[in-house]
Length: 87
Image 1 (cartoon, helix red, strand yellow):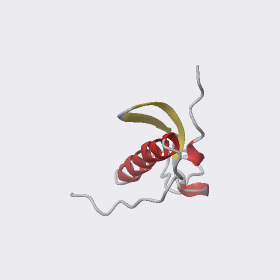
Image 2 (cartoon, helix red, strand yellow):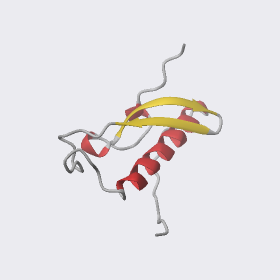
Image 3 (cartoon, one colour):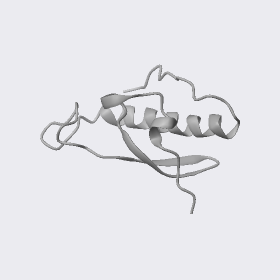
Image 4 (cartoon, helix red, strand yellow):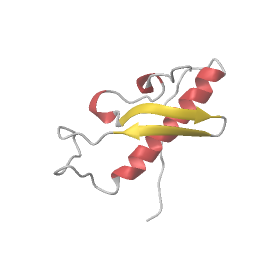
């Protein structure tokens, strides 16, 4: 089995702002990433995180997918932006 890439090689976040733990699985049209809620995390509130943080988890997972696509085509991993969401 081939080990998946290290998440920090795919997502242009660093330190405590890299919220994804690791890439679990990927395919041509999907990725699955893992998040660990840590007691010392910036957003931890007694073992919980605010619901809006799910949007950031999603955005970083999309960044991981984009990073995989970039690597597969020999391109550098690039910074992206989430411009908005509804409700």
